[in-house]
Length: 237
Image (cartoon, rainbow, N blue to C red; front, side, top):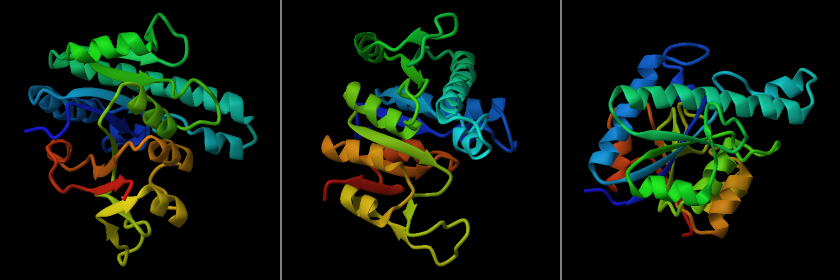
């Protein structure tokens, strides 16, 4: 039985790469779509926010001399590409989904509308939010926190390549220690790089719980949504 009626799932662009070093892998998209479909079967309404790091990273472009605003604009377009790819994966398994974009691109996506988003969710449509917040200088983590609050999600599920939050990178340090539960203040004070500080602060202000889990482990998303002790839970302790 699901512990939540409505969730916001934050996916990094890297989750769509599969075994590739760049771009979108159809098999990775299909795997994610099938795992999300299992949530629909539990009666869970799902909104998704996708990053674009598998295609373009604005921070890297800025390091090479590009201005931040156009670099972020390119990153927003990368999330649209990922959104289209994921929507096609949903189509292949007969799941209704809609792409809603924070930037105007009517040929390929609907412009984001809060009222329309709520209507789609109530009828069981998966919503794929792209374009970040529509503004430069804000990450897709901030977009995820914003959309989670706007759609009335009960939890923000942050999908990563590790099984929770650690005191240091577990992929580089064998001595890394995993946290089971943290407060927003502890995440911010320790500078833990799980989400950007703006996103954490927004969740803290509005008491939006966060679950950080490993999206590459089959069934982990479903277990998290069913309330099993998966990953790391961040809340106002």
